[in-house]
Length: 220
Image (cartoon, rainbow, N blue to C red; front, top):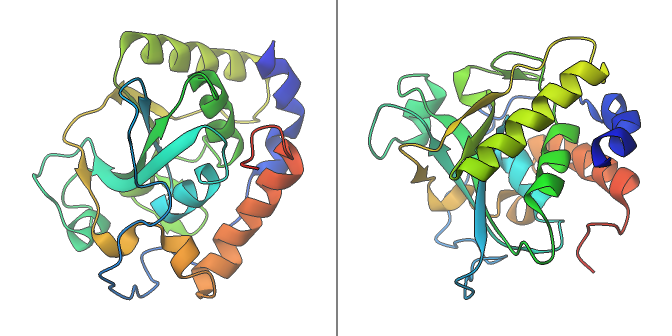
Protein backbone atom coordinates (compact mmCIF):
# COMPACT_ATOMS: atom_id res chain seq x y z
CA UNK A 1 0.00 0.00 0.00
CA UNK A 2 1.27 3.48 -0.90
CA UNK A 3 0.78 4.80 2.62
CA UNK A 4 3.08 2.19 4.18
CA UNK A 5 5.79 2.90 1.62
CA UNK A 6 5.81 6.60 2.43
CA UNK A 7 5.42 6.61 6.23
CA UNK A 8 9.18 6.21 6.79
CA UNK A 9 9.76 9.66 5.37
CA UNK A 10 7.06 11.61 7.17
CA UNK A 11 8.94 12.74 10.25
CA UNK A 12 11.94 13.87 8.22
CA UNK A 13 9.80 16.29 6.28
CA UNK A 14 8.46 18.37 9.17
CA UNK A 15 9.99 21.83 8.98
CA UNK A 16 10.46 24.32 11.81
CA UNK A 17 10.01 27.69 10.10
CA UNK A 18 12.20 30.62 11.13
CA UNK A 19 10.20 33.49 9.64
CA UNK A 20 6.53 34.30 9.22
CA UNK A 21 4.61 34.55 5.97
CA UNK A 22 2.47 37.45 7.21
CA UNK A 23 5.49 39.44 8.42
CA UNK A 24 7.14 39.49 5.00
CA UNK A 25 6.44 42.48 2.80
CA UNK A 26 5.09 41.63 -0.62
CA UNK A 27 5.85 43.60 -3.75
CA UNK A 28 2.83 44.08 -5.97
CA UNK A 29 3.27 43.18 -9.59
CA UNK A 30 0.99 43.22 -12.59
CA UNK A 31 2.37 39.86 -13.60
CA UNK A 32 0.04 36.97 -12.99
CA UNK A 33 1.03 33.37 -12.69
CA UNK A 34 3.23 32.61 -15.69
CA UNK A 35 3.73 29.02 -14.60
CA UNK A 36 0.88 26.56 -15.12
CA UNK A 37 -1.76 29.16 -15.90
CA UNK A 38 -3.36 27.47 -18.88
CA UNK A 39 -6.12 24.91 -18.48
CA UNK A 40 -7.18 23.47 -21.83
CA UNK A 41 -8.36 20.00 -20.87
CA UNK A 42 -11.99 19.62 -19.86
CA UNK A 43 -11.18 16.31 -18.15
CA UNK A 44 -8.84 17.88 -15.59
CA UNK A 45 -9.70 17.49 -11.91
CA UNK A 46 -9.12 20.01 -9.11
CA UNK A 47 -7.88 19.68 -5.54
CA UNK A 48 -7.82 22.32 -2.81
CA UNK A 49 -5.22 22.06 -0.04
CA UNK A 50 -4.28 24.28 2.89
CA UNK A 51 -0.94 23.57 4.57
CA UNK A 52 0.24 26.85 6.04
CA UNK A 53 1.36 29.73 3.85
CA UNK A 54 0.06 29.27 0.32
CA UNK A 55 3.41 30.40 -1.11
CA UNK A 56 4.90 27.14 0.26
CA UNK A 57 2.09 24.93 -0.97
CA UNK A 58 2.25 26.44 -4.45
CA UNK A 59 6.03 26.05 -4.71
CA UNK A 60 5.92 22.38 -3.70
CA UNK A 61 3.11 21.34 -6.02
CA UNK A 62 4.64 23.24 -8.94
CA UNK A 63 7.27 20.49 -8.90
CA UNK A 64 4.73 17.71 -9.53
CA UNK A 65 4.28 16.17 -12.94
CA UNK A 66 0.65 16.14 -14.09
CA UNK A 67 -0.27 19.48 -12.53
CA UNK A 68 -1.23 22.06 -15.15
CA UNK A 69 -2.26 25.04 -13.05
CA UNK A 70 -2.00 26.24 -9.45
CA UNK A 71 -3.85 29.20 -8.02
CA UNK A 72 -3.30 30.60 -4.52
CA UNK A 73 -6.51 31.63 -2.82
CA UNK A 74 -8.71 31.78 0.25
CA UNK A 75 -11.32 29.12 1.10
CA UNK A 76 -14.03 28.19 3.58
CA UNK A 77 -14.51 31.55 5.22
CA UNK A 78 -17.53 33.78 5.83
CA UNK A 79 -16.68 36.88 3.77
CA UNK A 80 -16.97 37.40 0.03
CA UNK A 81 -13.83 38.46 -1.85
CA UNK A 82 -11.60 38.82 1.22
CA UNK A 83 -8.31 40.70 1.05
CA UNK A 84 -4.99 39.29 2.18
CA UNK A 85 -4.91 41.67 5.14
CA UNK A 86 -8.42 40.65 6.26
CA UNK A 87 -7.49 36.96 6.06
CA UNK A 88 -4.19 37.53 7.92
CA UNK A 89 -6.05 39.39 10.67
CA UNK A 90 -8.27 36.34 11.17
CA UNK A 91 -11.42 38.31 10.41
CA UNK A 92 -12.86 36.14 7.65
CA UNK A 93 -12.41 32.51 8.71
CA UNK A 94 -10.69 31.66 5.43
CA UNK A 95 -7.70 29.36 5.10
CA UNK A 96 -4.83 30.13 2.76
CA UNK A 97 -5.04 27.40 0.12
CA UNK A 98 -3.92 26.39 -3.31
CA UNK A 99 -6.40 25.26 -5.94
CA UNK A 100 -4.65 22.66 -8.07
CA UNK A 101 -5.66 21.50 -11.54
CA UNK A 102 -4.26 18.04 -12.30
CA UNK A 103 -4.46 15.36 -14.96
CA UNK A 104 -5.54 12.18 -13.20
CA UNK A 105 -4.09 10.14 -16.06
CA UNK A 106 -0.65 11.34 -14.95
CA UNK A 107 -0.97 11.89 -11.20
CA UNK A 108 -3.69 10.54 -8.92
CA UNK A 109 -5.53 12.37 -6.17
CA UNK A 110 -4.11 9.83 -3.71
CA UNK A 111 -0.59 10.81 -4.78
CA UNK A 112 -1.42 14.47 -4.19
CA UNK A 113 -2.68 13.53 -0.73
CA UNK A 114 0.60 11.75 -0.03
CA UNK A 115 2.61 14.82 -1.05
CA UNK A 116 0.28 17.09 0.95
CA UNK A 117 0.73 15.14 4.18
CA UNK A 118 4.47 14.71 3.73
CA UNK A 119 5.33 18.36 3.17
CA UNK A 120 3.83 20.00 6.27
CA UNK A 121 3.02 19.16 9.89
CA UNK A 122 -0.66 18.14 10.08
CA UNK A 123 -0.58 17.78 13.89
CA UNK A 124 -0.19 21.46 14.81
CA UNK A 125 -3.52 23.25 15.12
CA UNK A 126 -3.70 26.52 13.19
CA UNK A 127 0.07 26.72 12.86
CA UNK A 128 2.97 25.90 10.57
CA UNK A 129 6.26 26.96 12.10
CA UNK A 130 6.06 30.66 12.93
CA UNK A 131 2.95 31.14 10.80
CA UNK A 132 0.11 31.10 13.31
CA UNK A 133 -3.61 31.65 12.96
CA UNK A 134 -6.66 29.89 11.57
CA UNK A 135 -5.68 31.00 8.08
CA UNK A 136 -2.69 28.62 8.29
CA UNK A 137 -4.69 25.56 9.32
CA UNK A 138 -4.07 22.17 7.75
CA UNK A 139 -7.04 21.53 5.49
CA UNK A 140 -8.32 19.44 2.62
CA UNK A 141 -11.33 20.98 0.91
CA UNK A 142 -12.88 18.33 -1.31
CA UNK A 143 -15.14 18.88 -4.30
CA UNK A 144 -16.48 15.34 -4.72
CA UNK A 145 -17.56 12.41 -2.61
CA UNK A 146 -14.65 10.34 -3.89
CA UNK A 147 -12.17 12.98 -2.75
CA UNK A 148 -13.85 13.12 0.66
CA UNK A 149 -13.66 9.35 1.13
CA UNK A 150 -10.03 9.20 -0.06
CA UNK A 151 -8.95 12.00 2.29
CA UNK A 152 -10.78 10.57 5.31
CA UNK A 153 -9.40 7.08 4.74
CA UNK A 154 -5.85 8.36 4.32
CA UNK A 155 -6.13 10.42 7.50
CA UNK A 156 -7.41 7.44 9.51
CA UNK A 157 -4.70 5.15 8.15
CA UNK A 158 -1.96 7.66 8.99
CA UNK A 159 -3.26 8.14 12.53
CA UNK A 160 -3.46 4.39 13.09
CA UNK A 161 0.01 3.82 11.65
CA UNK A 162 1.67 5.97 14.30
CA UNK A 163 3.49 7.96 11.62
CA UNK A 164 3.05 11.05 13.80
CA UNK A 165 3.51 11.22 17.55
CA UNK A 166 0.43 13.45 17.86
CA UNK A 167 -3.04 13.14 16.31
CA UNK A 168 -3.61 14.63 12.86
CA UNK A 169 -5.79 17.76 13.06
CA UNK A 170 -6.25 18.30 9.32
CA UNK A 171 -9.70 19.69 8.56
CA UNK A 172 -11.59 17.79 5.86
CA UNK A 173 -14.59 19.67 4.48
CA UNK A 174 -16.36 20.52 1.24
CA UNK A 175 -14.83 23.49 -0.54
CA UNK A 176 -16.87 26.62 0.12
CA UNK A 177 -16.49 30.36 -0.54
CA UNK A 178 -13.26 29.98 -2.48
CA UNK A 179 -11.73 33.17 -3.88
CA UNK A 180 -8.45 33.67 -5.77
CA UNK A 181 -5.77 35.65 -3.94
CA UNK A 182 -4.34 38.88 -5.27
CA UNK A 183 -2.13 38.69 -8.38
CA UNK A 184 1.08 39.34 -6.47
CA UNK A 185 0.63 36.08 -4.53
CA UNK A 186 0.55 33.97 -7.68
CA UNK A 187 3.75 32.14 -8.66
CA UNK A 188 5.28 33.80 -5.61
CA UNK A 189 8.39 31.74 -5.05
CA UNK A 190 9.48 31.81 -8.69
CA UNK A 191 9.19 35.58 -8.74
CA UNK A 192 10.64 36.26 -5.28
CA UNK A 193 13.12 33.44 -4.66
CA UNK A 194 15.70 35.75 -3.05
CA UNK A 195 13.24 37.09 -0.49
CA UNK A 196 14.02 35.99 3.10
CA UNK A 197 10.87 33.89 3.62
CA UNK A 198 11.51 32.09 0.34
CA UNK A 199 15.14 31.39 1.28
CA UNK A 200 14.58 30.22 4.85
CA UNK A 201 11.18 28.50 4.66
CA UNK A 202 10.21 27.59 1.10
CA UNK A 203 13.61 26.57 -0.31
CA UNK A 204 14.20 23.90 2.40
CA UNK A 205 10.75 22.43 1.70
CA UNK A 206 11.62 22.11 -1.98
CA UNK A 207 14.92 20.43 -1.19
CA UNK A 208 13.19 17.90 1.05
CA UNK A 209 10.56 17.23 -1.60
CA UNK A 210 13.28 16.51 -4.17
CA UNK A 211 15.21 14.24 -1.79
CA UNK A 212 12.17 12.15 -0.89
CA UNK A 213 10.36 11.94 -4.21
CA UNK A 214 13.29 12.38 -6.59
CA UNK A 215 12.09 11.99 -10.16
CA UNK A 216 9.10 9.85 -9.23
CA UNK A 217 6.58 12.67 -9.41
CA UNK A 218 8.72 15.64 -10.40
CA UNK A 219 8.40 17.49 -13.67
CA UNK A 220 11.03 16.49 -16.20
